[in-house]
Image 1 (tube, rainbow, N blue to C red):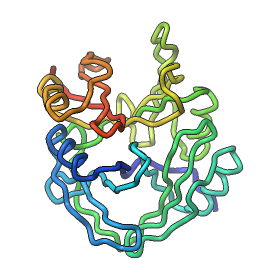
Image 2 (cartoon, rainbow, N blue to C red):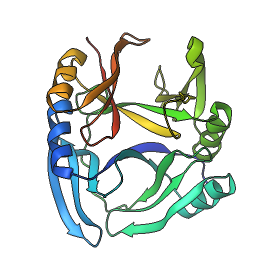
Image 3 (cartoon, one colour):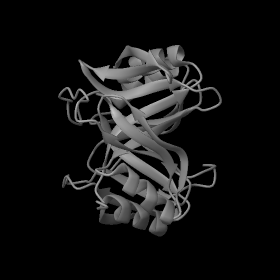
Image 4 (cartoon, rainbow, N blue to C red):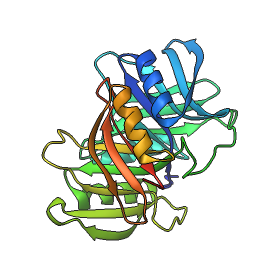
Length: 255
């Protein structure tokens, strides 16, 4: 039976230089890196807080971007429903023994996502929760069609609308909840700005101080593209680009 329920549960950086990217994010976010056993898919690195993995990284020439993994109960049913809804399947269901089955897809507006079903035997160390340093505190979708984009995620994963915020010339910013009833929700969606070439997800990594993090971004060869700016709720954010070209964002409780 198709079960429209899912949450972001993993994050992955595709980059052309894992060593440089590992050094950059370790400095900026405070993660440590750990090399995982190599299989047929090549080397895989995890970004950790303590002994808990928060995200992963792999070397992929010609691709530099973050992608989010959404956990589902029935991978095959979700692949079928996503394609029926106008999404695309880029990599068919693939099994990583003892870990997960996953498929690389995009939503009908073109934003990349990975849907996966974890293996019950997969190690699951207790993760710290946001806003602890190194956790993922926010998910943001830039899309070509806000209403159609939200409708897709609502139907596929059971997400709900919390509220719409009028951002003036930037349009409507829609807060959504993945089902865990956080006061501000789990993320936001908006119509993408003209300078963003394609629909995409952006992920906000929690740091202690946005000002100190900006200094680390600049020192590491990254760029601050927007901010620092204060957002509703009192937090501070920036949008940035790492030295290899991947977009990312940071959020902190203090300036």
